[in-house]
Length: 249
Image (cartoon, rainbow, N blue to C red):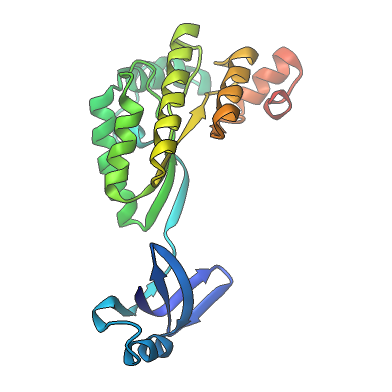
């Protein structure tokens, strides 16, 4: 058992305690108690002094969670916008897809995963959900990315965005990589999990989305996707099919 003393302990947004700390056993928080209570356990010999981390000069709080992350996207930071971009449609077709997503391979995925993990940890983020968008990447990329994240100690969900924008065959290949990663990390029972991921209603057919949902359901994995990707998606779907994206899903 170990203990952490804090000057201020933030247990939740509405539960902030002064001069309190907590006990850790088997990697889990067992109990929140006062710093005086921790001292009492040390005096009784229940805790060894070397097992007490003194952070009374600090505010201690749970790690932040980044619920939607594109680790590979940092490659676009600071680069000039290329292509003829007039709206969201042309942003994707003339810039983001050809200049960013289509160029991503495993080498770039691992570099950006390591860099952004360090950046998130520096900001207090300890868990995140990532969507890789790289239709041409190697078949073992997602597992390699997850293994790298495991080594940082962060909790994460990894997935590869799958769609039919390149071809139906490419979409199924990407779904397969999701499924293999979900199975692989579920078997490891570690801090990383896999998810099944699709893009949007304008790059995926109804049947493709249904197949993705069935893959997720069969293995108890998350199904994640971009819902109402800017105003472009709901406006287009409403115009073409008189549906909202939420109604279609």
